[in-house]
Length: 239
Image (tube, rainbow, N blue to C red; front, side, top):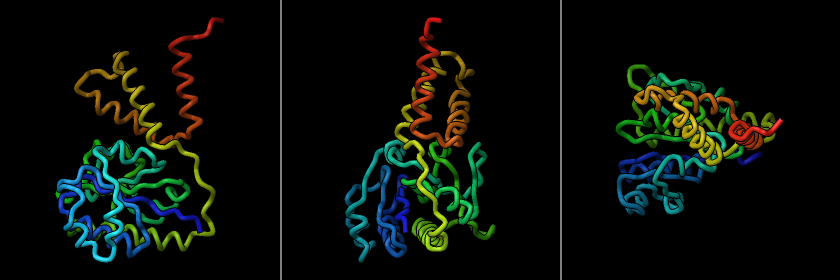
């Protein structure tokens, strides 16, 4: 069986106890890679290690980043979780099997969970390939962070066992680092050309453009082709 186990990324987690409980939930389902983005409390943290109990090795091996961009840079496919309806030009899924079927053939997958009190921001979500909402009762959609992680990891494990024989070869999508480098260059070019006008709408305009490129699921080769296109447009060859 292909070892397609996503990395769990907690963005700005607040309570170290919750981080430890997330580690326990991950360990219960065979997940072992955890990344933290700008945790509120100092790290390493004894409270997190204590609440992780027998799963403390996951907490001790956690990787820390100061931005989401850096945290997701090596991944090919990034799934954001959100309990709220977001009006973004982004694929939004509520079915585990549909999500799994789309994501599973990517080599490096990350699942983002936001802060306990607010969840991921729209800016955070703009960096991801899709948004997933765990289907719950409309009467109460609020979950503890560790419960959310446990549900996701458990369902992923069930589907991995069920569809193992139908999993194809890995997609050759670009990692997010190369994608973001190209997006930074494109943003600069669009700013300089005056395309992103008026200025107060430039961020939302560019987020829509970036979402278009994310939906295209560009490979490394395709990004290199885009670099070549921009290079020739700036310095056309003599005919």
